[in-house]
Image (tube, rainbow, N blue to C red; front, side, top):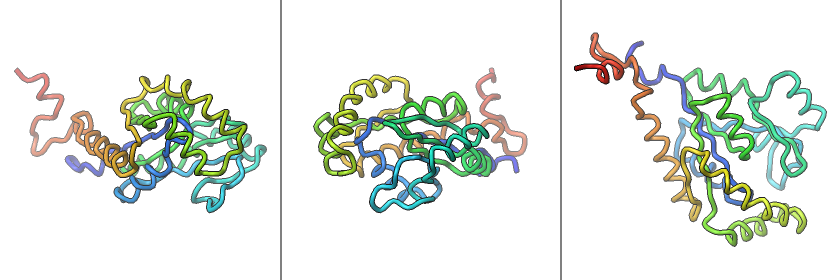
Length: 215
C-alpha cells in the first residue's frame, strides 16, 4: 500500500573493524536494543570457541563444504582471514531485506567492501578501538589466540585502520553501551533519509522528488 514504510526494503547494516575491537559485544548490545534488527549468521571453517553454537554463533563447516558453497554462488561475500574462511550466506539476507526487515552483518573489512559492491545502499560502520593498548587487552582477555596469532593481529591493526575513510560512519568502542547507542542513532537517521520516502504520497500529494523540482 502506498505510504506504508514497512513496504520498503530493509536496511543492510555492516559492522566491521580490526580484530579485538569488540565488534561482537557491540552487535549483541545493538540486537538487544533493536528487535527489528536480525543478525546474519556467518559461515566459517575455523573451530568453535568455548560457548559458541553451530547455527547461532556461526555455521561451522569444513573447507570442502565452504568451497562448495562458493562454487554454487551461495555466499554474498567471503574471504580467507588468518588462515580460515569466513562468508555470508546470500539467501537469508536477500529474503529478510525484501520482506522489509533490517539485517546486521558482523564481518571483516574485506567482506564489508565486497558487500558494498553487491549492495551499494548498504550502511558501512567502522568500529574503531580507543587505542592499540585496548585491542591488546581485549585479545589477551579473550584467550582464544596464542602469542603468534595475537602478534599477527596486532601487526595488522595499523593496516586495517587505513580502510576507515571508505566507511560511511566511524564509531569508537570506548564502552559497549556508548558504541551501541551511536550505531543505533545511525540506524534511526538512515531510516529517516528522504531517499527512502520517494513515492510516499497520500491522496496524490507531492513526493520527495516532486518537492525538489517544484518552483
